Image (cartoon, rainbow over all chains, first blue to last red):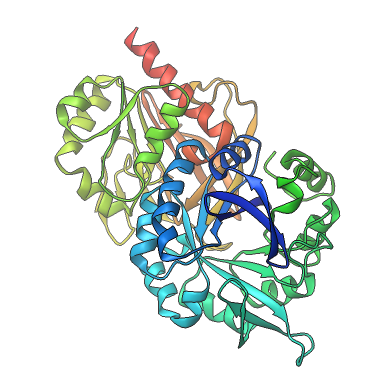
Length: 254
Length: 203
């Protein structure tokens, strides 16, 4: 049986790890290479690096960072942010990443998912979805693009299903409403998506306590939990999280 | 010096990086002279079976000779699968035939690919797993696995709805289906142990 995964997320802006609340008010959390090595060594199951600047100028910077991260990280890691082509994915995988996550470009051009899946295998393609509760349709969420700044009319559950059909190997599901609040994951969202697809769902946004992690798996049906604030700022160690979840009966890599 | 066989595809360097990180010398090469001089060989786990065999090309013979000479060889993921007679992945394709068996699809009892951390019960007294205790989690990412017909070559299995081959050994030839270079501390320990086996044989 596969274990449930603990995945620290490193949002990178101008070569620093940052963390905000609801995608705003960024706070410095350290050096990406150092933090990556620290997490790799302290029991994290995977890492996610998201380039939140994602401008043309930052592309070369992020490839350099991936190379430096790969020297010191001996667990699988995903890189995302501003990825628009299979060539960019190829470059990141060659630089040492295991997986690439696509978001805005996949909404604009869904073929990006299928092209990448055909060339690198489904397991290399993570579909990242930024989800916001719909104000007009209760119980629904809308897909937001461009780092969450632009809401679309696309329904999150429908998009996740389409992503799976196109060949995504995993869904990285971020609740914009919960992000950085430490008030718990949006488990209604997690459940709606994990019930709709057969590929793993990574719950993201809102982790504040250990029982939030448990709830995301048990109530939300998530295969993995992603977190930033509660681990970067030292609230809990990876081992504390894993021991807690194991003691509550979840299969963990300890 | 450990030689990691270069298929010139994907991220073949990650195994070299892992060896260097733990202070072991390793280089990427497919030059028969380097292979002949190496203290041990690693067949890394990238690409599909047919692609990797083709990329191995004329380096296949020196690898087989090294295997017969008693030099330690470690196959990782697809590299582990290359040790067997053949594979059905986009195939059939012939393998190196160093261990009897055939590489077949992972039974679709659960989602394929089998990707993530899974628990491997480790055999006692096997040098490759020294210092790791009775069981550890390792990182797997594969859609095919080896059906081993060599008696006693299977050293560990992993439970993924059905039992899959996790590791094999036949004399100096070792194979692991998981990725030690991506399996955190326990994975690095496996590479350290392999290096120690290579050093021991040279001494």
